Length: 562
Image (tube, rainbow, N blue to C red; front, side):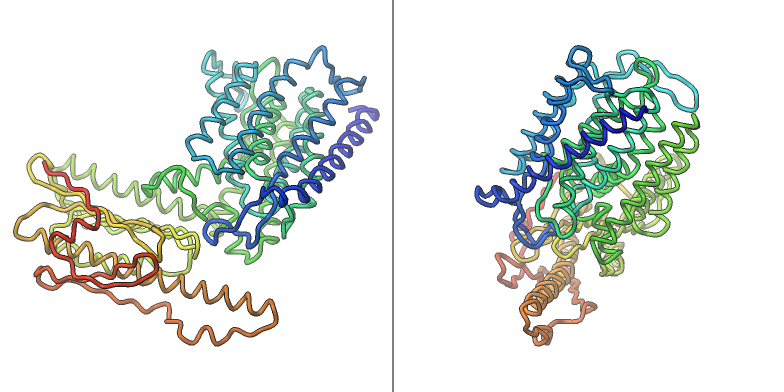
């Protein structure tokens, strides 16, 4: 890099930073006036007051302004209309599409599948425009991809878009990572000789840094999905181009090492939701920033930890690229992942969930190969929270072997009180459904007017004991709902106390009637006479009813017989 290039890049980066700050300040003023704000929901979102959206639009406008001026001027970076116009037009079209999609989602909350379809369109625009790979290199070995290179590029862009989007859940996080990654990609592009890519990366760094001033805790404005998806898309494109050696050979280790944290969080979310039986689009508060905020007790400390980890992976990615040693980059990236898991900051629950799933699969395979009965398995994974749900689940399912119960599963996810748990119980014998009639049942776990989980059961149908077995499953619901209601009451009391304290009043009297957290009441039916009881909570009012065999269908069990 020559001195004129350094000066020109610094001036352009500063221009992007100033333009982004001006546009962001304007959005802070205009967004509340048109109702373009993110309202707190006391559920998944962590902010406590309505906050303006539109930071992503400010970054987009700043980038377009600075790049639009520079491509028309003679500059030492080799960014020219006549040689780079096609790449820039494709990037502009894909970026405009993703920003428009994000603004619609910020305004009206698109369903997950529709947003994914829109992201697929943006990735397809990039691939159709020539952003693809013909081969990749790892540990000095080049692998030709052929037509698969387009598919690999498509999934790469989808991964980068969604990984940054998922990480945009804490003040300053996405913008900080965007700034660190943009600077790193710019340096990587200089090393590999892609100077036009480096210039765009430095402009992106300036734009994200200009916004970051308004987004640090406590945030005055949010990126929104428009901003997080734009940063993910542009970084995915720039990192891919900066990591190219030759025409289109992708240096895999450098790019993957740089994206360690976003990819780790995205992969953990997929594992957590898939293996616990939830929808892949189901929101929760078990992302890396949620876990760090819970462990570090403040968003500022959590942001510093994430920034430090991102800086380590960035330096490792650059070191591996400069020294031509992929091992350095991958070992450093693996070290960051190991640090998070070993210290319990993030990832330990997902590892435990994988081990429990493998144990269950291994037990089923052993039964199938050896034709032997297995053992009763009771596994559980605590994703977040302080209450010992596994102790409760083990206690409740301990007598399950005395009933005609084949399989039980509980899935609990209450973001409002930051509690998450998934538990399984599997009997020693899983009969062949062709020989033995079985029935499937599902009961919701409710607190107030919210459904925060469910209990699934598979029973062996027996005319003599079916009512007794079903009452046992129903009896599992009540202790969970009681504890959830108690934890929610405690959380509400704490919030009221904090609010009163903030205005100079004391709220100690609120806690007089709060029950201790270890108070659990459980009802197990005695002799199957149909008089088992459960507490039903509907629209905030608590009632008690005695279910008959007809009432049991009100729990919405779905039944199948073979």
